[in-house]
Length: 355
Image (tube, rainbow, N blue to C red; front, side):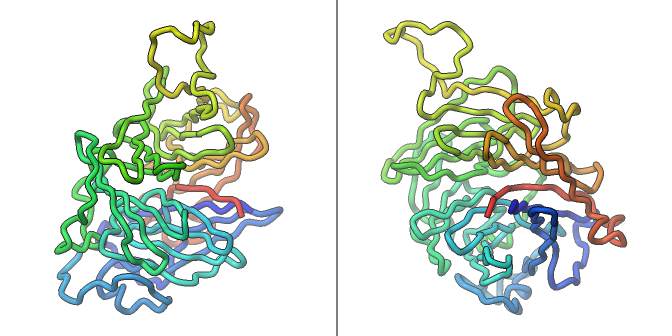
């Protein structure tokens, strides 16, 4: 079964959303599709009256007024043997894989504009996006360790300003946050690889190192990479402008288009990639957005479309390496709430898991 997370936003940024639960997950099984809804606390009061079991750090009563911003749903997904973990703006949700019901909500003061998350070593790893800080969190919400990547790629481990509850700090402007705008966390043998939209590159952070380093991508056209996941010996990236990049981790130079040079040639290379433009596949059009990726059986699955100001729908597209379309399913907001369509600004797919 495919599990696709999505986010929806309202035309009025101060819209008063009174529904206790809001749609955030779209599932596609054999011959069936379903939408699943969850509570989304954004203000201090909403956290305090949350009905679902809570783990972590409850916000203080005196946090003051918070402009909630009417944007709800899930960004990154990851999973353990029993749970699907989903990231909202300021919390991580533990969802039962058996029935997609909510077990508990985890939140602490370092959660802000969460994107991709990773379950590893019985912990959740996420990025406090605007601070370029990687956070390791136990499943009870406790912060275990942090890595903040500075502009010179030095890495510090001190906690960000503890007087600020970052859950209630909104984005001051649209677009990427932080110097790097880290999107996805990929655990490695000695640390983590973080995809940076601002650099269209990978920043590697070793667990005990004082500095990070760049893993640059050899690109043949401008890209804006967002998601980066490994499947077997390959690492796949999505670029938000409708492209998929594939890198061979076992043989970083495998995709060089030129003749093989002697092994002692004094050249340096980035991580060479193959590029697939979705417009050049049997989709036969340019998608207006591209996020999330899953690869299985030779087919690459991505979410497409859903950009601001476009039709209130997005798709789950499956294409082969040769560009054949194996899946092209569509989610439309009007299929679940036609009456609210005029108040919705966008509905966008974000991440993909298969359970």
